Length: 193
Image (cartoon, rainbow, N blue to C red; front, top):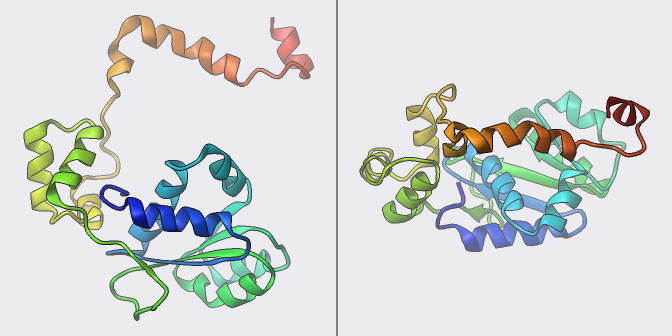
């Protein structure tokens, strides 16, 4: 989603770090624009990521937007119908993310997501586990559009990561997950030992 768009990702991160900002991102679709904001956040500074994620939510309806309108200092991603409440949420001191698709009217302050080059798109697909020829073919067939790619690759299809099939690494995963959730203040965790 962020392939070839590092300048745009930096703009989004800067706005996410600001207090009560209006972040308008325009992609081929609203879903691509919202996914881009999330990817920009997740690939940036871990401190900013944790700061924003601890206050972030996405609202889908006008009622949900009104339901959080009494709160301030949130980062709120707006989905279609909820966008009407953006002004109210901004007035209350929230940051508002307005994802736009190509079907939306122009917004002069929108961060416009250009499509990456075929090479950039292909390289991104390779990081997802596609082989060179397949990545190049897919990049060409979907016209370098994340939105079209999403339609071409069903959401239920996934590839297992390489480490999953490497016996010793797989066996180390469960203890690592358990250790990561250990809480020395929890009586139940202490009792489990």
